[in-house]
Image: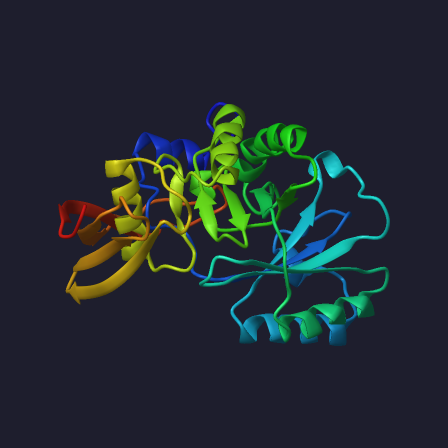
Length: 301
């Protein structure tokens, strides 16, 4: 296959175009492991770690549905001192709960297990993760690395490149943790604008894939409200009652600020025809798409 004819999943998704809203994976805990060597295609699973340590970390992560990500600074810029690890948690109160440590031997990673069992300290600002996992998907490298460079130049202490975070076809993907906010379809210029706005507590609907503490129909509803009324803080809206009738949901989105309203958002879903969703995919797959079909104001102002 020539370079001109090579399939890139992110190009295909933009051409269709695939909706972003409602595509953030569910979860509220992230484990970061700084790994300065080459990343295996399957990330943490493929690392040649001491077997008992690897099993303990994986089992503890699985028990709380934590996502394990390998991380590094852009361009493999070395951090000072030994490699780091972190446990990041999103709380319903919006607090950034973070625990950080270092490791020089495989056995040091057992500290992650202990950290998962403790609340963690309150820490601000969040961590900005850019998927640049080229061996997992070509688009993550082609589109992710320029974004990693641009963001690292602007916020060198906050930004890490990371392994697969889901949704290759939306590359470049960025997740802000432990805020639990996914952004997609970014390039170098838009990523600096989006992350800058996020750090100023203004989440825009453009490029928003969703909040990871919500399920896809709820993510879609919040994105629809933001698209309708404009940007808002990460915790300015919460999801209330959600009811389902077949392929349709009614999601109540409640504003938490004095001047914000209450909305009922109707969301419907449908399954797409089979198609190639990743650069490495060999067989077509279908996916469920969510879209907001109406927004009704049901409360003040």
